[in-house]
Length: 277
Image (cartoon, rainbow, N blue to C red; front, side, top):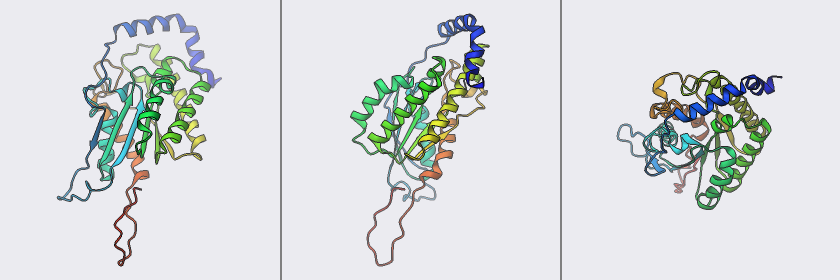
């Protein structure tokens, strides 16, 4: 019974929910995607004039996802989740992080597989990628995707990314908490929140199932998104402040898995090569 809770909650309210959804779509401001380059390099803070940090190998970060990755709600990609995550990682790891964002406003996992994945396999796969962040779930929630479909599409996307990019780590961001999005009226907010929580649980199981096949981790999304400063003017997308908080949360969770290590070098050795991880 609990498995079908979102559908059971939505069924008796369906006419009302449809009306609320149409009205919300009509009155919610349509914010553009971020402008400017979707690539950049985040430098670590240099403490005590120590330049050795900036000379460490660059960590290559790729993000793929829906509107937050596309930068909806902020001015530039530096302020969006990709730039913010890279900045927080550079600070915690003490090494530069080169980042690239591949996002599409309104994307579902199905959209990502059909339109974003081919771009990645054709254009980005020849490049070296250390970390991949994927961030989906909002549009799959509002589309009321079934558990099975969401799980199958997520597994397919993850396996394709692993096959074509061979990253050191894949990070799956938790599904955002739709139950606190101010742009959504009640009871639509409650029902979509239930669906988002359900798909978030599906993602957690998928990550657990694939953990023996690839280096993968899941980071739950912030739940305390009630601060208005965390949301953009449309009440639906993260603001630059919200993206910064989210980026720091992601970096705090995954940085310990990406710590830079220097190999032990014997006194007689002259080899100065370094291991990336």
